[in-house]
Image 1 (tube, helix red, strand yellow):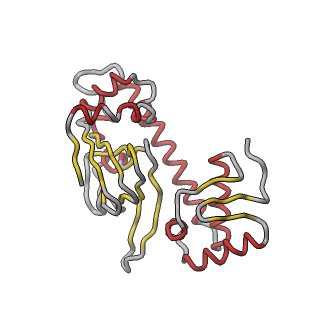
Image 2 (tube, helix red, strand yellow):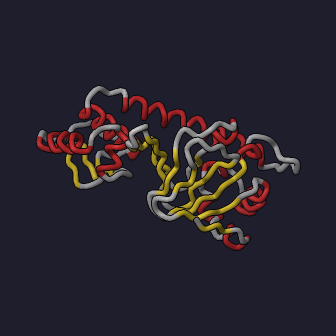
Image 3 (cartoon, helix red, strand yellow):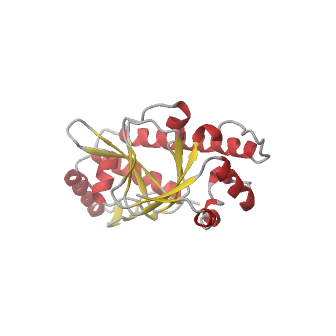
Amino acid sequence: MLEIQQKGNMEKYIYILKNCLLFDGIKENEICALIKCLDGQIKTYDKSETVFHEGQTYNQSGILITGTLQIVQYDFAGNRSILSEIEPLQLFGESYAITGSKLPINVEASEKSVVLFINSKKISSVCEHKCKYHVSLINNLLRILSANNIKLNTKIQCLSKRTTREKILNYLYSQAQKQKSNEFEIPFDRQSLADYLCVERSAMSVEISKLCREKIIDSKRNKFKLLKTRSFS
């Protein structure tokens, strides 16, 4: 893990961070000041490194700047389940940091990734300097928490399906709706998709092959096309 603390290195990421929902409506020069106010630190992780460890408590939440992270959980036998994938500019770990709860999950880098860490408790309360843009920050945080709740409900709906086939179709339909297209890429390879759906990879591959033969879907690696569905506009 490489830690970057120089001011210049922080500023070079501002052009990316300005597109983060947490900083929506806040000017670039204000974002620099705000990150300093929130004790911002940038760290780089190599593939397979753990960003947050299960059972630990953190007062920081993260914003992924570049790369990809996965929220994963291991059972007593060491079986790995992917709960969610974190994409660039997403905030993560905020709920546990604000409440001081122990993490029931790991956050792991699935490729080389750069993360901005900020003090979550300083997000949720107006700072001592009474920054005029801090109110916008709090409103944006509420929007993010609401969006994460919707995302969690989507995952629960998917996992509630009884069969592997139903889980696959439910996930693919949700991705088509999200991307507003019947043709789309998913952020998982086959093993990661099986881990996300909590199914055996071999059984999942069999069902995907059946769906292709039945001309319900078309599939090539992580690219899919729904052949029997409504249009998205």
